[in-house]
Structure formats: C-alpha cells, structure tokens
Amino acid sequence: MVTELAQFLLDHRAIEEGDFTLASGKKSRFYVDVKTAATSPVFLRRIADEVVSRISFDTVAGVAVGGVPLAVAVSLASGRRYAIIRAGEKTHGKAGVIIGDVAGKRVLLVEDVTTSGGSALYGIRALRAAGAEITHVAVVVDREEGARELLEKEGITLLPLVTIGEILPYGSGLSD
Image (cartoon, rainbow, N blue to C red; front, side, top):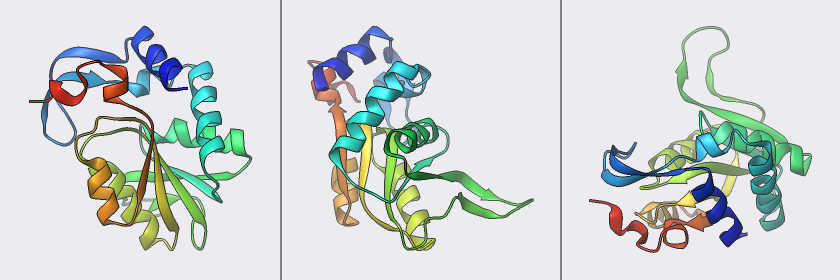
C-alpha cells in the first residue's frame, strides 16, 4: 500500500513544490494536498480499506474539512457510524462542535495530513470532551514534523498510511 499510495499522490500532483505556510505556521518548500486527491472515489476506497484493515473502532470521526470525506469513506467501508468535528463552535441552530454520537464509543480519528499534530489534537480534545474513548489517529500522510511525538504525550498512537519520507526521497528535509 505504501508504494501504491505514494505513487498515487505523486501522480495526482498531491505534492507541490513552492513556498507555503502550513496550518501549523511553519514554512515549507512543499505542500501535501490530500484533499484534492480525496476527490477521487478510487483513492477514497483504497484509503478506507487500508484504515479498516488496520484497526477496529465503533465510530470514525474527521475534523472539517480534510477529515470529513475520509471519515465518510471509512464509515462506508466498515459499516460503522461517523462523526464530524467542526472547525469551531457553531453559534446558531444546534450548537456543539461534534455532529454525531461519540459518547462512550471507541472513536478513530482520521486526518488527511499531520505536521505538528495541532489539528489532530483539537479533534482528540473535542472527542474526549464529548465522552469518546480515543487512542488512535489514522492519517494518510505524516509529514514527520512532530505530530507523532505530540500525540504520544496525549496517549494517542499515530497510524500513518504513508510518511513524507516514503513519498519523497528527501523527506521532511524540505521544511524550513
């Protein structure tokens, strides 16, 4: 799966070189765009099947925006419910950060890309506040820039399907 997934990401131009500012605030000479690759049903199916083969869970959750299509795909592949974690608190309609029932459930958080782990940590904390049991985060691409270590401090295991070092021969050395 690693070689196939890495090649798929490269073939679909999900790795771009240039000058980018990441969500973590870090500067980088490359950008990993899993969101665009995830518009392919073939890609989503492959990702979902791989995630389902690696871990069991009651509910899968994704942080908006990048994690939502992944959560839906994993839900369909597993037959398990999914939840959406909003990027922020909603102030109208039904309030709350989480859409879906996670209380008392073993929840798997799925992410498109991890760098420092901030987005995953936000999702973990939101899920725990809602009563979920969460021990793992599955990510399509780990940029290998601290997410694993940050999540380990929270008692979370990061399960990358592929790392940037497996995609690019120069790996995370492109970060400034």
